[in-house]
Length: 113
Length: 118
Image 1 (spheres, rainbow over the protein chains, first blue to last red):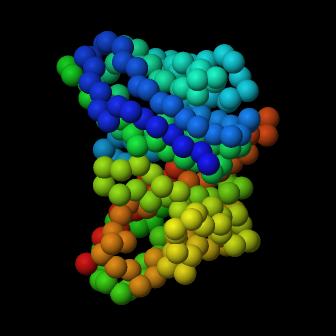
Image 2: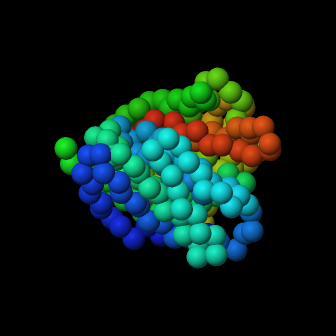
């Protein structure tokens, strides 16, 4: 079974500051993918960043980066220089071969001006 | 970029009626399509996986006779909620998967359909 745990229901960050969202997972697969998705009030799911488990190098997309600790089964998202538009629900997800995707419970991020 | 559409975006129906939701990949052919359900303030739960021309694979606990999935082409999948009841009221999201270079798949999500059953 694959499970994803997000232990922070809500997080808050000051505009221009940095925030880290936590995610842990469990899987028996050796080959899998990890994702962070953003869901704004429109409910449209937006891919923020993706990490292949076989890659040791942490993925980075502009202001978004991850800290992937495979042995600890941890996959945290760091948002640098937070902007008001970053406010949303953030979901961590795990998938085998990019299919069969399982989502965590989500973290609601608030950005204070 | 890859675009996935859903229609309708919002539907209200009476209890006992059936509702069909369409999911289309607009500018690519999807190897696989997925249907998720999201209750208010909750996460997305995978309901079923469908491949074009074959029967959908349902997750444990999802009634296949109630949630009928038809994947008629590589760009269209439909979810029919049969004999809908108020407890079926939810946000339904589809995604379409495309195989990118290197052999990996990427899922693109539709904007979702809000179903309200009175």
